Length: 432
Image (cartoon, rainbow, N blue to C red; front, side, top):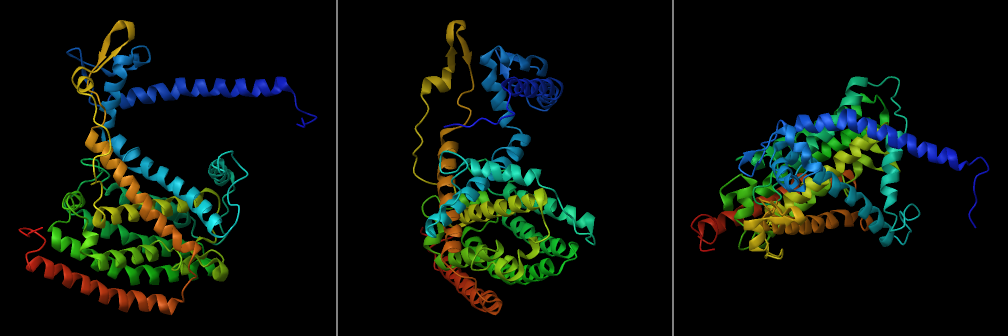
């Protein structure tokens, strides 16, 4: 039996909905349409019926569907779309949000708990939205003696650094925000900023427990960055390039994990340490030092750090896929587009208006994205799994593992790569 609050008035409820609709329409009219108009001036407009489409006529897509897809395709070829939507920040943030939800549900299943369930009809899917709204609406509390400029700036820089990391990951042939020739060196340079940001965040709060967590994070990240870099030198030796797209293309016949399994294992272990995931979660050991270097963060400042953390998780998982699992390569599973659509376009209704330039994405691009996402999600699953299985290790064991065992195994991996190269098995001119 439903219960209605005694002060509930249906007329007030309708009035609140109409007020919200009014403000939405007003803001869209005064801000949204001018913003779209400004963006259209920076897009290379398509040619329709032999005429170059102007930004002033582009808004007629509301009444003329034949111009919608060409404008959309032109927008997708801009740097703004690649950075903000795909394959940049928006795509990575979407996978990060899904990772948070899957992690909570998976850990609940492993530990025989309910997990996010009560908010939302389908496996508690709306719980993710509820947590996001909670973080946005919560008060941001700054310690009285904190270094406020650094305290505010550190989470923003953390997210920006993670986004820069994402920008270097090629998702499909030709689909990468920054396709630089020294992409792997750029990855190493960006990773080097995370320990600095972490220690700045810990120091700026002027609190004991964040500083202890920050010192732990600094020791941990520095200890594992060296074997992380060394574990990837085998791939560089066999491919002869630092360009991530070229490394993916070199794995058309087989992934490098087949010949360099030691390097892949070392890289995976160092990923867990760089991400501060169990069993290497000493910087955020909640049973020892509250929440480590995140203790004093609250509200959306904490939300930004969490967003940056899961963006970083996606970027590391995607980098593992690019370097050891062949990236976007895989059998063709996406069906080809009909030739008549590619050549003639689509005829729209009674006005028989053709929409040229279809499809927006090529078959190779869509197939590559499918394989890339499948492989990346698989790697993310194995990154999340230890949290429900393994305990935290001691810091002396962590440092010993990073400085001695992993570095030694990384040199073994390099010698294997050199042996395969000079034996003529792999590399330029190799039999494979």
